[in-house]
Image 1 (tube, rainbow, N blue to C red):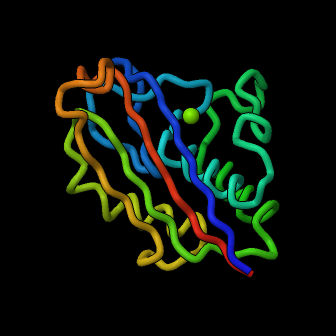
Image 2 (cartoon, rainbow, N blue to C red):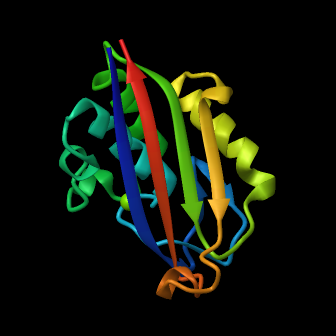
Image 3 (cartoon, rainbow, N blue to C red):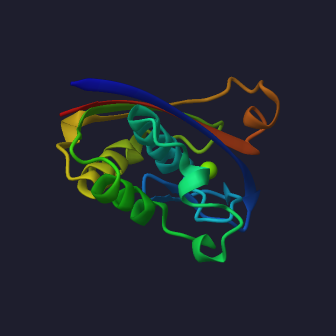
Length: 157
Ligand code: MG
């Protein structure tokens, strides 16, 4: 039995915030504005997993007006979904795309993949992370004031 899910997330970027992607802090002058740590990549992955399970979305599981999730570690939320919601399914593979104008992520991609693989207890070859710019267009994405992430996941049991 196989099921597929997709996830998408968007956050504003602002000075004085950390840029956290897949649990890895990326050197950057701007970071995600959010109630949680704002890890846009992990949020898209959580939504893809919950989508594959038809179990709602990240907002229904971890409301952003709940003080419990203020500055929440998104990797911990991902681990919770993996242990509490995913079984009896397991992850076959995940493919993701980040869109941000800067900084360049090339040198960080492998550490992001390793961190995500560790959190989900899957092989690093089962998680793909791609990054592209917005070519200077698409409003706040192009000016470097926002970031989006897309994720697709295949699960099986
Ligand atoms: Mg989010």
